[in-house]
Image 1 (cartoon, rainbow, N blue to C red):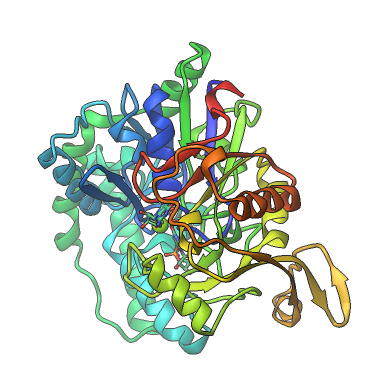
Image 2 (cartoon, rainbow, N blue to C red):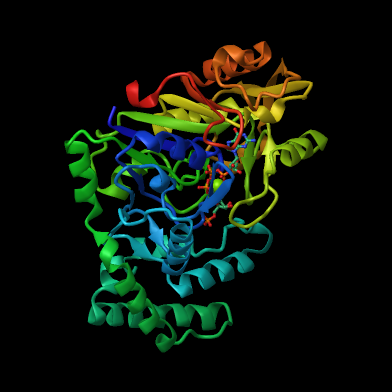
Length: 429
Ligand code: GDP
Ligand code: IMO
Ligand code: MG
């Protein structure tokens, strides 16, 4: 296989970073195609922990480096901060490529995100306040600023003046906030453009050429299917397509190029921010999972909401994202638990249903139908093979795979690269 996508199959934070890093040791390049620095991907290599926001997690291991595609929204300040850190750690970043068509997160996007959230009050989305939504809004409104615009002084000046006039009107008239000054932004962002220039190229050509030459390319998703702007729990979603379909448009390649779509999931479910979450645990079991697994946001530090594994959501994710392989992470969290629950269906107004309702009102009325399985006592963090897993852990994994209807390819029993059990090598499927 030459093209593998790793997508989150729940509400993000499934451990995509870890699996991407693990798989990219066999890849020529690692590619990101959506989202921005709302993502927080944790990678543990030996005694080092890296928290990646914008730079693909595959940069550590992929042979020819990493690609940031046109579908990504780039905050240059955050990106250069991340690159500086990587360089300090001795990581080779020379292979990085940035799309000339990617949109740039401007200071007014971050403010707009914050003001919109404030104005929504208790109806807020709970965004990461990184300007992701407003940047994609401007892209769709055709007033966005792209990386290539930062490289042309006159184009950038004209676009920035137009956008700023509109944003300042919004900030002062609707939100009663101060204006931003052109002079405070213009030269600074032109400089970012110059600093970025050596990495900027048409990344669609780079990625398509690699695939044409049968090189192995790993497509690294950000967020998760349930946060997809079309297929997630709208409006409590992010502003990009997180499903595998978003990869084709976020890179500029045919939708027929992916060979395998790995859905990454946890042994349970988490969600950060607001919105429906049918299997949410608001009791001491939820607290125990949160504390055992340190479920606090990588980006905002917010405690993550925790719930049981939801196979209704996973089957939805499988269908809309074409998931044909499953990576399950954080299995070790259930060592010492008495029992584990899996949601097999929802009950809506007294009827059992097996689809994910589009209407939030219906979704809030859905009650999960659970199946209960026994957990295990053993610490499994050093287990290396399927055979060495406790019987009850195997039963749990087999049931998850059966309910989702997708074979498991990896099982993770700890945050380190090495704590990964490979059932089937995705590059050899
Ligand atoms: P991502 O956004 O999908 O890359 O996931 P995050 O990095 O935001 O959150 C996943 C968290 O789980 C990180 O802190 C990882 O280090 C950690 N993690 C990943 N796999 C495992 C695992 O198998 N066991 C444990 N205990 N932690 C894991
Ligand atoms: P990774 O890649 C978990 C959530 C936010 C909020 C909603 C919208 O680490 O899995 P946004 O700032 O995107 O407009 O916020 O989406 N969200 C994530 N939750 N993991 C992420 O990324 C997320 N990126 C955004 O918490 O509910
Ligand atoms: Mg994360």
